[in-house]
Image 1 (spheres, rainbow, N blue to C red):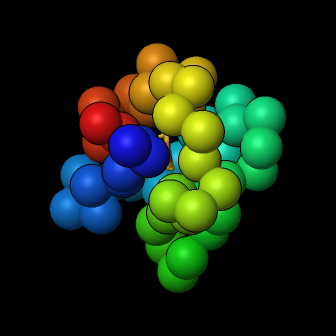
Image 2 (cartoon, rainbow, N blue to C red):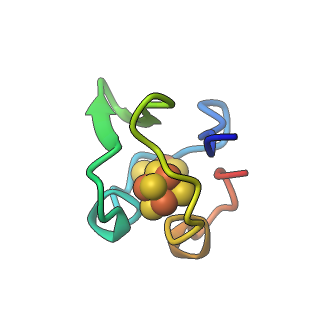
Image 3 (spheres, protein in one colour):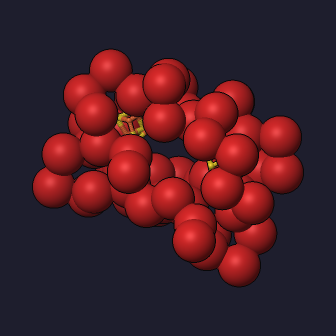
Length: 55
Ligand code: SF4
Ligand code: SF4
């Protein structure tokens, strides 16, 4: 299972993107999204999100 970013919660800070070793996180408009085909579910991004948008 890949991680997901809740777009309703994400504030677009970008903190998560830099923590992803496989570059699965990209900006889309004023939010960030995780490419499920690329994410290896390492969990690194989850702890970087100040608003708990990643699960
Ligand atoms: S769980 Fe790991 S691989 Fe998936 S988006 Fe987060 S940092 Fe990247
Ligand atoms: S760290 Fe959280 S709030 Fe910031 S861009 Fe990533 S998902 Fe959105």
